[in-house]
Length: 352
Image (cartoon, rainbow, N blue to C red; front, side, top):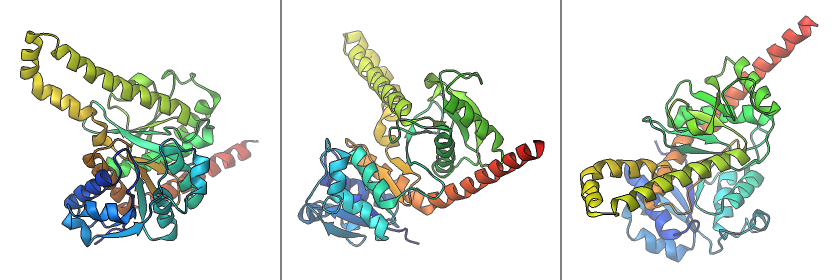
């Protein structure tokens, strides 16, 4: 059975058409049910498709020459939504011409366009940006929000937890994801009022398909003992950049150390299998595909510098969200949360 086709913003990202088409083709070699709406300059897309016969019968091209610049302000990008490859890819989801959209372009513009075109789901106040991060275990950790909302209240954080848990059940296959709130300490009395209130609501929501495990500190995000880390977009973006920067620092430090002397070079040749494993584990292309959760449609953001393999991973994530109906899962969990809230209010009323 074929999945709804995926709209690809072929013009977005650092490399543009070639890498986006190569990545989509790689994904389709692994999953021949994938079909695409390729949005961008037709001549350039046709040229890129020459190298991928498997894409011809599975793709339709929507011609568009206009591109959202990497440094373009979201407010300006929105005004050009009807003429840019990014805007037309998102609009295809709105019109039902595609089941999801993938872009490696400007993150702020993509979020603004997606929110305006698709709107938030009923029961969700704000969409959140969620991404997969590597851990010491054999599974990734999901973290949200990573920059869509700089300030969040308890209600937002609880909604993020529900969306993140639904996402985790799809991509990680965990029946009951372990959810924690990012905080400055694990003690129950620590944190802002919003964190305290969100934690209380999540403790009471025992009917949800998740396990709330309290708080987590930033240095424990990648240890492997949590499946979903929830925070506001300001703290989440800082934590993400710190994690990515540390990963680059470690790999660059190892490169420098191994080149420092003949003995080090010999040591590198001996330890190369281990260092290659480390490089592969930390490579962001292997965890590519950040998702805007909470919209009436699926939109996935690829790294702007992603390789074809990274784009293929983003497409694969998109397909899994479509196949498992992420919006329906979130809607079901929100209904369960509302039942818990109603029951709690009823108990309070009876006690008065």
